[in-house]
Image (cartoon, rainbow, N blue to C red; front, side, top):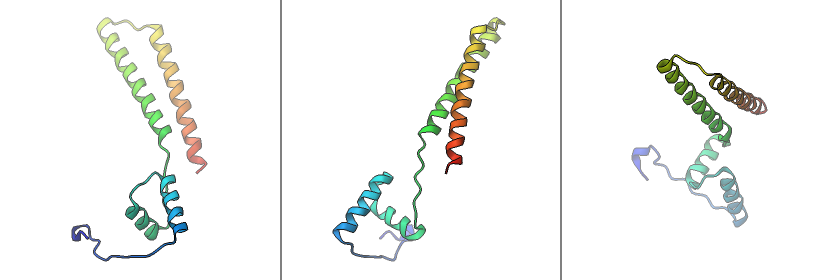
Length: 112
């Protein structure tokens, strides 16, 4: 035991092969490989919540794209003093995608 971690009291218990299989299945569903951390978390809190962040990552990618487009348009407008209709249409389309993804994400959070 590493005394620096503050965990100095060992706990040991035995499980049946069936129980071990259930534990491994639940760990696999959660996507974790650290059995000690999993068992400690379950013993202390009684539950583990895994949040699927794929929608949040997609939203972040859309935000980056929209932000990059806006920066490129701002640079072009500052250097040429011209604002093109295609740029505005592209921004509106990206902004619509962004709000659609954001609304979808909010509705998923409401379902939790």
